[in-house]
Image 1 (cartoon, one colour):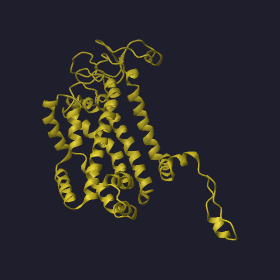
Image 2 (cartoon, rainbow, N blue to C red):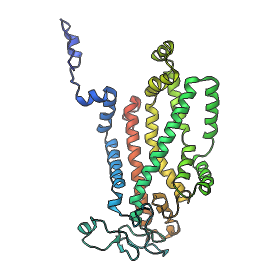
Image 3 (cartoon, rainbow, N blue to C red):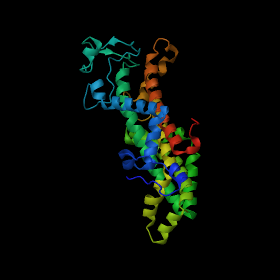
Image 4 (cartoon, rainbow, N blue to C red):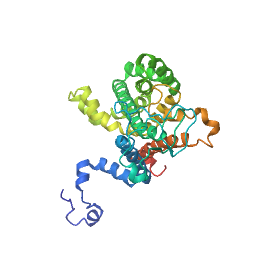
Length: 346
């Protein structure tokens, strides 16, 4: 791209015009997207968030290598070393039905005997295996619920704001009714109702979280679209006869979606926490499914003895905290980059 340099005797103008060259990356992404990307990469909080997210993503991808499943057809089933109630300490050896030894074990640990690296929980479920494969569960539930609620909220909020009038009143009253319900309690009740019909799996909790998680997106996108739909380029598109669907999805939503994207980036961690809470209460997945909430639930009967069995709650709790922190750090940084009024305040 050639530079535009003022000519003539206007020295002041020539000195104030920027002569910065535009690189290939900026030309490919566009000025605004390039500003967002560079803003995220320059913010220490977002860099730390991306490091944490990448760390968990690598664990999720390499789960079959890090912790090989006993039964490849049921990889999310946490292997058990017997049926005793009392947890076994960290470093204790496998005694029954040990999983396949991973290739990295002997070079790293210096032995060919499988050990419970992080100990076992009540019922002799291996904590290490539950955390590794629970990372996949966290990504599956967090992304599925967040993307689903995001799309539902965007569609409902956009239709409500664009058409206005009685359509807006009806949709917003429905949203108000849903917002009056306590989120986690409503999700708990719906998941409890769905579990006997669908069966023990991820789906009852996912459906429940999606059913009561889209309203915030609908309200935010509605507010932004109400202001954007009155701008000149939208009015011009209406005058020349452009279809409503094209105006909405091509011209309005792309210019109003950034605040909602920030909310979605922050919501991934909240969804994982909510799902872990439902699993902790025994809703959704079958007992022994690799999920951080369920691994934590195995510690409920040993709360008074955590001075001895601290590892059964510290390791899954630490994984949950770091995972949620990663998405929250990225979400906060994204908010600062997209909202100039918030820069430097978080």
